[in-house]
Amino acid sequence: MTTELSPDTPAGLVERARKDYQELAGRGLSLDLTRGKPAPEQLDLSTDLLSLPGGRYTSADGTDVRNYGGLQGLPELREIFAGLLQVPAGQLLAAGNSSLELMHDCLVHALLGVLPGAASRWADQERIAFLCPVPGYDRHFALCERFGIEMIPVPMTDEGPDLEIVERLVAEDPAVKGIWCVPKYSNPTGVSYSDATVARLAAMPTAAPDFRIFWDNAYAAHHLTDEPVEIADLLAACADAGNPDRAFVFGSTSKITAAGAGVAFFGSSPANVTWLLGHNAKRSIGPDKVNQLRHVMFLRDADGVRAHMERQRALLQPKFEAVGRILAKELGGTGLATWTTPKGGYFVTLEVPDGCAKEVVRRAAEAGIVLTPAGATHPYGDDPRDAVIRIAPSYPGLAELEQAIEGLAVCVRLVGHERQAA
Image (cartoon, rainbow, N blue to C red; front, top):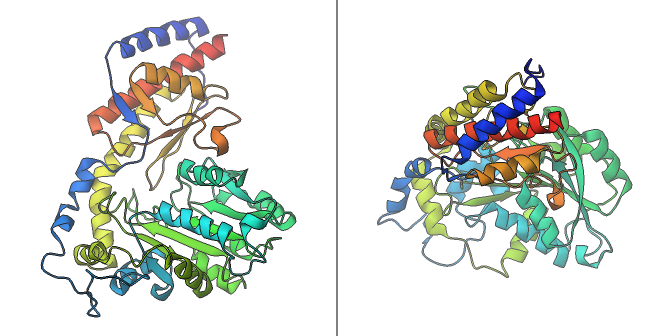
């Protein structure tokens, strides 16, 4: 990240940027950086999963996985992920293929049922609000919008959401029922929550007795460096602080094995687990235990997950390094951008001058480079500064990614220099 301005004249910088953009637009590119999907090469790492479980159809305790039942999921799979997700296996559910689906269901059940600690259904209360750290994950915001839950933006810091604001809002407003958190290598900033942040979230007084932390630990095993980040155990911290029911922990294998055929997890207090199981029993007779068994056979244990994620890292790390290298080469010293260098996860956050993000995204699209819409990182699609752009480097091949980031840099220079010269 740099702040020094170029010594060239504003008019000269604009002219050069416009020429570069004309050349870019003339290439006929068709590149997509919109979503953090695994690349085909990453999915290929789990090809052997698709031939499993072969002739085997019983779990470790002799359960026939082809049949109904087993709402909590296979015990041996829950054991594999208990440590990675920081949830005791007995308090962890293994479900279908989508953690987003579990978050959706928890909101629905809270709206239409009564959470442990709640006086009534959320649907019977006049107003429901969630705190939304920003920049954040657009699908969290979409769930709130879908159910009419008011979203209150909270700025992110280098240690997690701004706790001064969070603590004040949850203490004074009983309508604030939850907060969205991606605590490790967060989407899209890559921030990992500090131990102090976890402790304060667990212990803070809340006006709502049924306040919940939606702890979306999507990138628990998704490291990009030799020094994996470790975060504090929220579930244990909540129990120690006398708030055992506060945390809903979510995770999945979607970016570990087969993105469309993974296994999702929910972890919480015994009371919350009983609550969710009771509601889920009315919508399903059990998850896909055949898929869970093949994950057990393929991954084997927690060390197997870590070894598999090292193979994933070998494919992803060069792409993230390329993004940083190109942005530094093309935008370093211009004063037009700053960007993150994440230690894990799936995204890079690019910040451009205020009022420029939408125009950068528009110019990039016209040149054949499709980006996540500006504003998607904020509730209601509204970034008040119009400054944040989310980059998803995972899916394109390295050569295509390099083209896309070089082109994006051209668009940033064009829009930024035009703004400076205006």
